[in-house]
Length: 421
Image (cartoon, rainbow, N blue to C red; front, side, top):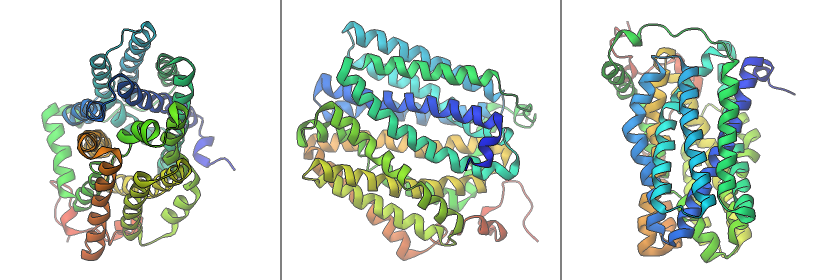
């Protein structure tokens, strides 16, 4: 049966455009890593892709969130997609000409990631204006598995296109998917933004968002949990080496291995939706899923056979889907609409900046220990951190989902609001 939110024509169009764009983005992300590694055969240099992404995310994310609460979010999203489309076409031309160099790729990664720091908060903040409030949770619940579907399809397409004609076709596909969302956004109608944020300076807007996040103990702890997995269990940077040098399965095998976590996430969607919708021990589920993520990464690193690696990758994706769904829902429940752009941008510094910087960490470690040793050591960190939270207790372990809204913590007051009476 079609979800009610997809029967909303406006959201259905938007959802289709976002999924199309994400498929191209994920294909290009896989192509970056493969192309840099193919040019250099160096994991530390391949890890510089993550450094370029991380620098752009950490420096520009707060600015992107502030703009998402100040200007027309459709136009902001179109501009960001237009920049990414232009860079993707430049990459396609460079790759097809045979003159592409590593520094070209790193600069293009930096530019596309910079555009995405304005793109991602606008995407998130736009959703409440497209659906009735009663459908908001369903809209976010649908977007997460759709994102994982893009993670599944994109790298697989990249592997096939690279095997057929090299990375240039991947970048052309990416440019076309950006164009799809740009066109769709012309047909969407959204109400104007309130003037609250525009009445203050950009710096004041950014400080207000940061103050809100600091005041929410749950959000801060969720960010730290996310970083424990993404900074140290960043498996994507070693996948080219695992596929080419350890498992010897070539570019097509690399595409399949890159897609395995997303396949696991999509297959786990039904279970995730039931658990998130019914469980009142979501904090414990989140922590156990984080431990499971670490264990699956450990098995992926040590896998002696390609089939075992694929299975481990699928399990890793399933555990990550559960943890991500709970974390994202918790952040949305904790955040008022007028701060959504800024809070989303701060959270994306962890959710997207963490994996990018994790590629640097694990890539450098792999230069010393090799891909197997680096991922093995890194996978132990989320296992230890989440286990410690389970044993120690606290806001994350005790989190119960929407039921927590009925019992707000005194430490979670909105900045400037009067204390509860």
